[in-house]
Amino acid sequence: MWVDINVHLELMSASTESVNQATNASSVNFIATGTHPDQWRWLVGRTRHLAFGLHPQYAAVSSDWFSLLEQYLGSHPGSAMGEVGLDFRPHMPAREIQQRVFENQLALAKELDRPVIIHAVKSHTEVISTLKRVGLNRFVIHAFLGSEDIAVAYLTLGGYLSAGGLMTRTPRPRALDVFRNMPTHRLLLETDAPDLPMTEMVESSPEHLPMIGRSLAADLGISVPALEQLSYSNACVLFDHDFSQ
Ligand SMILES: [Zn+2]
Image (tube, rainbow, N blue to C red; front, side):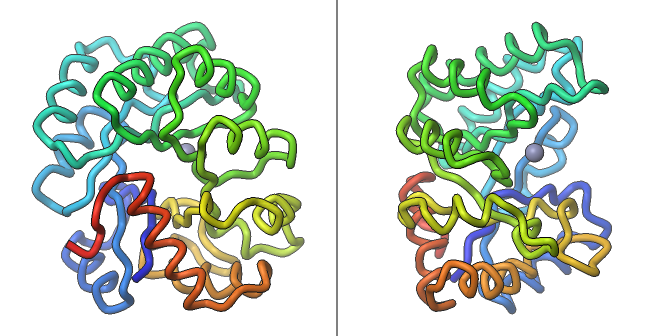
């Protein structure tokens, strides 16, 4: 069984029913990651494994999202937090706002002892210092593309790194070396569907995870069943969750 740790079900063009059918047929379980209050509401009741968080792109929303987030996490005891993080590309909200929103959410995750799916773009230094300040060690950096040094910093803090469809592209991404060298018990897999499609695909979908797995297994020099088993057991450990249920 494969586990896709980051799927944006509400953004996919396919219906939830067809995604659920396709993932069942290909032995993929997935975490549906809601990144905005409207998405949290939409996701509940549609699929089994959920994460709730305010994505940095929505960091400037004015609603009382934080108490709503507390409610969603509280009423779904097996849920994770995500995607939350920092994204310092120019079109994103101001850094100070993102920083406050990120840190408040990490503090809540720590208080509730929930694993966190983190989005870090052009912000690894600040994400690492925020994790240290909050003292949070249950987290995964989704779609990791950073350097060996940055990977070591996250791994030292207790974090996991997630590989996705970008690892299948040509030219071969440099982050493949990070995944080759890291401890396999900290490796997770994702599609980030519908984003980050594999080469020659328009949209990704969680049932593509075994294809990503086959490509990555070849690059890592391990067997496909071994990577499938890792994707399952590592996800069960970080998320403290039995994905076969
Ligand atoms: Zn992201």
